[in-house]
Structure formats: C-alpha cells, structure tokens
Image (cartoon, rainbow over all chains, first blue to last red):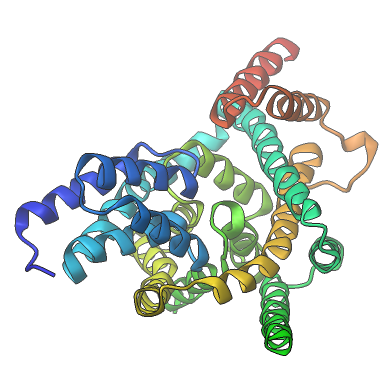
Length: 191
Length: 186
C-alpha cells in the first residue's frame, strides 16, 4: 500500500461525507452509493472486491454504513484512510441530530409539530412492519423448520415475556455455531 | 459516571446489532428505555421517527440524540464512539480473515441462524412502537384507541405493500395527514 497522500485522503473524506449526508434509508442504500463512487467513478476498488466488502460489512456487528466506511477507507489508504472515512460517515448524522435534539423540547411541545410527528410515527410503524413482513416471509420461504421455530420463539420471548434482547441474540448465535458444526461434521462423514 | 455508562451502553448496541438496518432498534430500546431511564417510550418513538427522516444509521442517530440529552455534546461524542468501537475491532478482524482465507461461508452460516431471531426482535420493537402510536402509553383498551393513528397506519401499510411507495414519502404524507385532520377536527 502506498503512503496515502493528502489529496486521496481529502477526496475520501469528502466522498464519504457527501454519501452519508444524502443517504436516507440505511445500510443497503449506502453500499450502492459507495459502489457508484469508488468503483465506477474513482476506480479505487474493483467490482468483485466491493461486493465482498459489502458482504463483510453486512456480516459484522454494527451499522452497515460505518462498517463499509471502515473497509473502504482501509482498502484505499490504510489506517489514516479508515479514520477519515469513518469521520466522513458519522459527522453528518451527528451534526443533524445535535441540532434537532437542541430544538426537540421546543419542537415536541408545539401543537402543530406534535401533530406532524404523531402522524409520521404511524408511518414509521407501518414502514417497520412492512420490512418485518418482507424479512419474515423470506425466513418462511427457506422452509427451514429450525429457523421458523427460532423466529417464533424469539418473538414470544421478547414481546410477551420481556426477555432481554441480548440473551436472545446470544442464544440464536450459539444455535448457529452449533448447526454450522453439525453441518461440517456431516459433510466430513459423507466424504 | 455518566460518560462511562453512555459509552458502555452504546458499545453493547454496536456489538450486538447484527444484520444492519433496523437490527439496532430493539437493542437501543433495551438500553435507553428499559435498562437505563434515559428516554420514555414516547421519546424513543419520536427518536426513531426522527432517525427515519434524517440521513445516517439509526444507531449513530440515537447515540447522538441520547448522548446530547443526557450529558451534552461530550455525551454525544462518547456514545457515538462506543457505538462504532466494536465495529472498528471486529470489521478489521473479519477483513484480515477474509483477505487471508478468501472464504466467508462459516460466518454466513452462523448469520443465517441469527437472521430469524433478528427479524423477531425487529417485529417486537416495531409492535411496541405501533402500540405507542395507537394507545400512547395507556393500557391496551378500545376507549384509549387513537382512531386517526390507526387509520394513518393502515393507509400507510396498504400504500407500502400494494404500491411499494417510497418510505420517506409515506411518512411525510402521514405527517401532513395528521396535521390536516388534527386542525380540522380541532
């Protein structure tokens, strides 16, 4: 990796800043924008590698946009690139939310703002449940009884019994490791 | 100390939210509404609404919003750092493994089993937001039902499923609808 020069770092910072400031709707959208910028426009990363980086960003815990920035920044300009790309990604939401939270108290008590916010909340609930219906039907479509059982149990545990979400994630992760091990052993047995 | 608490809480959000998008939402609710008295359910619902309407990941939006309300600008910075810290470590580690072995299949099979649980957690958090919209924290009973909220929710869900309208557009229309109805009905 070449010693990162200032011009590349500046361009990396401005690109991630721009992408982050204009991306509504989360991780998957931001990866598309990154591909357009870093693969198609700047030719810093080739397409196949970008797809792999996207898979890595989605597989790691944490926000996909931040994970993708870490990977792209590192790939383009090492540690300095990583820091610059992450800063570019988190600064726009931090600034916007800081400003909003300063006005929030005045905001939320205004009758008209409260009405708009209340209506948008009904919209948010619909958006989230729409996503859940899509994701849930994908799980059902795998026809894996185990996965459907995990989904139902996890829902009942958190919604009706208030089980801590971290416990649910731990349990599902442990189950995943166990089933991966079983699958690997079966494969060995066949060969 | 509040800064340490904020850092550790959002560290857990960053560490346990797998799968991106809404995956962080149930964890944020757990940390800032249930485990710590930082936001009421109403404020959390407002926060998710604001996060949806502004750019950036929900987790970063929430870390900034909660941090600044609890402990000012420094609180926002500390919470955000906590949120991205696990990513910095784990993503680097995974990238190292990936460039070394060029294989992600074991990781992806573990993720495949996590996914149904994450869907269930998002469903649970989404339903608690819907209950907040419909009953505003009151007990779930017909006399507390917010009819306007129910109508807007049903219309929005229909528009999303049937016509695949853009979510930001749907939310904005709901906001406008609520304003018009609220002013007309008094």
